[in-house]
Image (cartoon, rainbow, N blue to C red; front, side, top):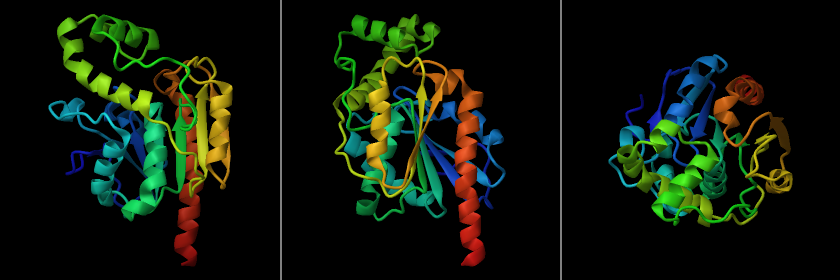
Length: 257
């Protein structure tokens, strides 16, 4: 575990050539990515981002605005930006990764070598669903059930779901309100999309190609919106292939430097 509460390091690798830094989806936490650590290339270190309001930070107020979230993450990011890194985000995490990368120059931070966006429309595309965060409580819980990303035992536990609702509303407010200004990023993109994800249209997935002058590879993964959980093996296969290419390039740079 990192000394900084923002970052979870399940398996520290001090000699790693590259870091894979993962951002959670709305309502998610670093726990999604912890099992990945043992399945990455030996010279890649996993760092899972733990924003306020969840898991070990459940007592802190969650962010409800994209720029505030990005700025607070940037303020502590020096701890993990001393090595080349790849950013991965699923759903809302993809759009946080995009906005963070877009603002890196303003924070004086090096950009990622690669951004992997998963389960998300291109950040400048509108959502196909109506706003969720401001629904009455019963309708909000029904929508969470429909999205199939919150365990049924949590949804059926009134005390627990009421405890989690402030975090979920805050995350969904960012998802509902944020719309990116389209601008090419300084790194290539890899995009993972679910074949049965009704939230993300094919056009909105293809829209990611507009956001990089350095190439954008799109891979379709069998499954719905939460294929990152339900089809983990194939997701990791694609992620490992992408980060291995970046790690190889980093090693080559070290040799010729």
